[in-house]
Amino acid sequence: MNVLRAAWWIARKDLIVEARSRELAYTTLFFAVSCVLVFAFAYIQDGRSLDFGPAEPVANSVMPISVTDAAAGILWVAVAFSGTLALGRAFERERQSETLRALLLAPTERAAIYIGKLASMLVLMFGVELVLVPIIGLFFDAPVGRAPLLLAGLLVAGTVGFAAVGTLFAAMLIRAQSRDVLLPVLLYPITVPVIIAGVRGTAAIFGAEPNLEAATAWMSMLVFFDAVFVTLALWTFAPVMSE
Amino acid sequence: MRVLDRLVPFLLVIAALMLFRAPFLVEAAPIESVMGVVQKIFYYHVPSAAMTFLAAFVCGIASAMFLFRRSALADQIALSAAELVVVFGMIVLVTGPLWARKAWGVWWVWDVRLTTMLILWMIFVAYLMLRRFGGPGSDVLAAAVGVFGTALVPFVYVSVRFWRTQHPNNTVVSTLPPDMAWPFRWAMASFLVFFIALLITRIRLEQNRASLEAAHLALED
Image (tube, rainbow over all chains, first blue to last red; front, side, top):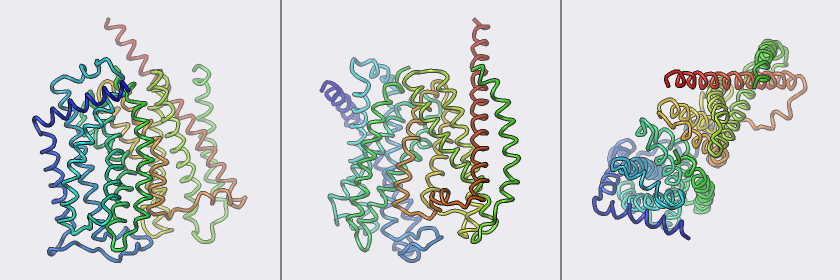
């Protein structure tokens, strides 16, 4: 109980700092929208979405990209990219104002710091996604309202998995050199299952023949990933952060 | 560790002799009726893949030991094993496409085993980059990457498996005809001896480096 209470205070502190400057919210959101635009230029031609080849995967070939695959992919790439940016900045702030040591000296368990940081990061990323999803629906004509609860579930489960690993790595890299490059270098290979499950689950919802069962299966895999990696992160946070 | 020191030259000689004998056995093995002579790359490809996973497993266990016990030996083992993941993984990633070009007509497909191997390899390259460029304290951070990377393997495997699969099944190995199984087991055993010899040599190198550094510091004081 004590741990959760301390985590709540840390998350609250982060959110108050953020609410006053709105630095992370604005920059992350604008970056996410820029990502969508860049991908739109890559996948849209003659004013409409590109449709590469047949819808059925052909053996021995690179997977053909349909519009819905592109929309699902762009959504998750934007989430992953803007999430990395936010993670890096959130901890950079602690380093610049030299409050990390004070945070680590706080008379509470290390796990509380991790949970608090994770919670404030999740609030920020969910906020970005709330804007991002309608934009994807608007720009790519993706049926974002088809299974709103399932889509929300996929996004929540995927974001928790991504942020759980990302918060641990961003926190531990804070004292490392060249942390700006090392964070994505470490984070993307490790979050590959999240991206695969998120993109495939979302594409299953967006598809011409929606397959909600497949989307649910992907979501349960994400939940399983979350359970394992949140546990691992809680377990490794204390030894990693001690000097 | 003294015993291990003496063991290294023997292991290296045994590995060299076994690896020298392996091509003759592979040459003598029958030519596979469907794929022809390209199938023979399998005698090197599969043992390398097995060593990659073994090395990743060793690195994961050693990293966890280092995180919680902070023993220098565990860290040295983890670093050495991580380098071996990258080396053997490189062999797998080179021999695989050579075979795939002949068997499937393309260099690369996004199949479950190929993708898993690539991701595993990338994680351990990232591990080595972190150790190289992370500055002081990166050994602890790298240990977390080692633990996460090893825990991740089943997830990548399952997720890519749902996504798509094409690679020959593992059951191929257990149903090999005897005149193919013998060279395969020989190659597997030679790679294992070679792996152990390399791992111990690399750990020794790291230990010598650590003692040299300690001597340096003692001299300066």
